[in-house]
Image 1 (cartoon, rainbow, N blue to C red):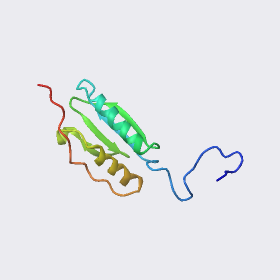
Image 2 (cartoon, one colour):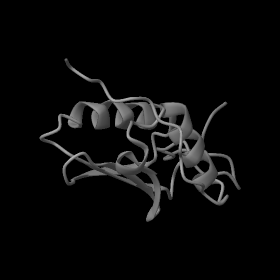
Image 3 (cartoon, rainbow, N blue to C red):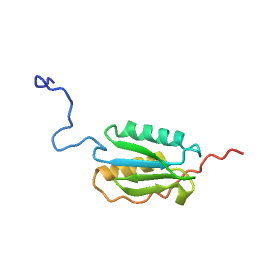
Image 4 (cartoon, one colour):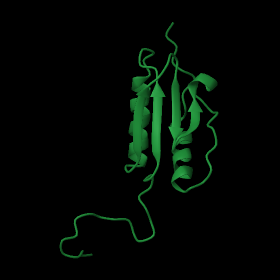
Length: 115
């Protein structure tokens, strides 16, 4: 398949957009709590699935690991006591990119506890 001369980027077919484009995620986490590694791991998984997504981090209060998608809080460690499963966040992003309503993620994996 040959492209038109001067064509530099590979765009999705007409009528389709890059998965995750137009979706903005903000993760607010507690740095002194050591949650940066969890944020980086989650951000990496999201970027792998949705390369066109916009994801940013903010420093939050003690114990915080809060995730907003397009301004809507979809996960709160302060409420759930743990961290989100990647699959649940990926599903919420899929819904947001399709314009579907978002629901709060209530499933969480327990935080690591060092004795």
